[in-house]
Length: 146
Image (cartoon, rainbow, N blue to C red; front, side):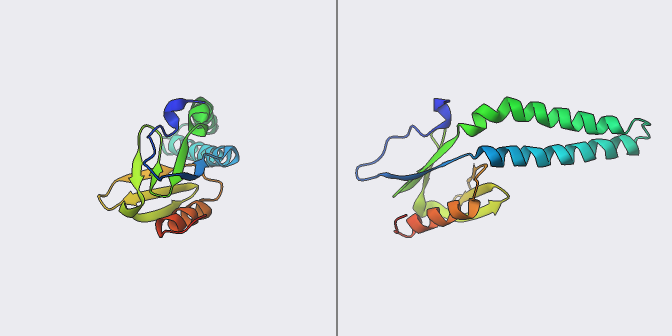
């Protein structure tokens, strides 16, 4: 597992990790499949608009581009972990979000967007159940337990 994609921020006194949010493999695959569908359609539309008689090659190009990207990024994306503590959300590459600084939690497909009062935005990507991820963060944010 890529250690830079997991939290390495030390916990404060009395702070404990309550749960972790990891990228879901099936959600990653489904998201990339939909990206491929749109890339294939987009490639075909562009070639058609340009008058290219081989419109079908747009589908091949779109599929190939997303497949290569998806395969190349899979190990890194699936190694990402966010930890929810009783005080903060700890993310990869020293990302730290204090629970009291969270202004909004938005669901965008399989992504949970965390917006802070300062306007910083963080993406917890490829969640199998983003609504449940938001529920858990909100529960701890108001002082509850999971």
